[in-house]
Image 1 (cartoon, rainbow, N blue to C red):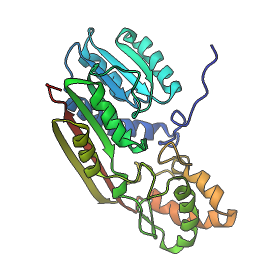
Image 2: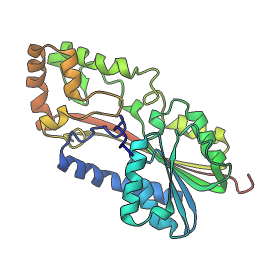
Image 3: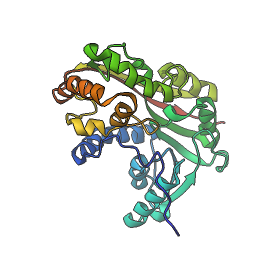
Image 4: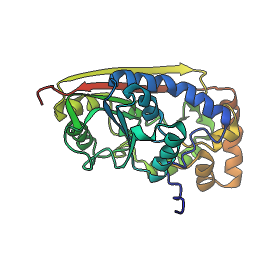
Amino acid sequence: MASLARDQWAEWRRDGGDPELKRAFLDFIAPVRDQVLDNADLSDGEILLDVGAGDGLIAFGAVELVGADGRVIFGDVSQYLLDHSRALAEDMGVLDRCEFLLAPADDLSALEERSVDAVTTRSVLIYVEDKRHAFEEFYRVLKPGGRLSVFEPISSFTHPEPPHLFRGFDMTSVQDLLRKVRAVYERIQPYATDPMLNFDERDLLNLADEAGFEEIYLNYEAEIVSGKPFWGIREWEALLKSSGNPKIPTLGEAMTEALTPEETERFTEHLRPLVENARRKGRSAVVYLQAIKDRES
């Protein structure tokens, strides 16, 4: 069978192709995985649905927790990533504990009502337009007493930035060029309507409540820190090759589209030393949400 073409989710270049940055990101994300799994409170023999499984960070972490008698369902919209995870599961000798479901978060109709013990997501709802339906689907597929464990960045905390800032860097002297670069991203992801930007932690809390969950707990973490590299990136070439999410171009691509060669040179002369010396004030916010379905539901 011919191999599937890589899609936007498989092609995402968050680390700019830099192996050291990839390792740094994995070091950063490991505690997130652990917290999501802790909140899922898995036991031996249970069934977990990992929505938006991607390359399997959460799902593979759950395989040992559910044991030989349990199952982990890898759910994703990317057939390429599902096939990749299937191959990894086979190599790891755990394929018999894994299932693979091509489905978006807001349409889990392939699964029966009350069919899983826990649902997990990590940085998934930011891409889902109908978040309300997603929470309703999570509730529907969970067994009575089932647990939902969610991790989401709150992008509305950091966007839109003031006109003189770009990813926390002061771009006052090249603000005319920044407007052109920023326009590339705003055309693809309008601040007012894009699902990544049009919600905050209160919306997630309310959506879980409205879906019917009996107990809901939310931990909100935010920081404003000076001198911290953007995603750990200090190498200019790595930043040029990186993309904030799978839906948008890399910085290098956006600059090529928006700027003339002369403008690109001026933009680079200003931004590059700021990047390499981490001269920025960064902002970030994330939430962990845990919800429990009523045992009588």
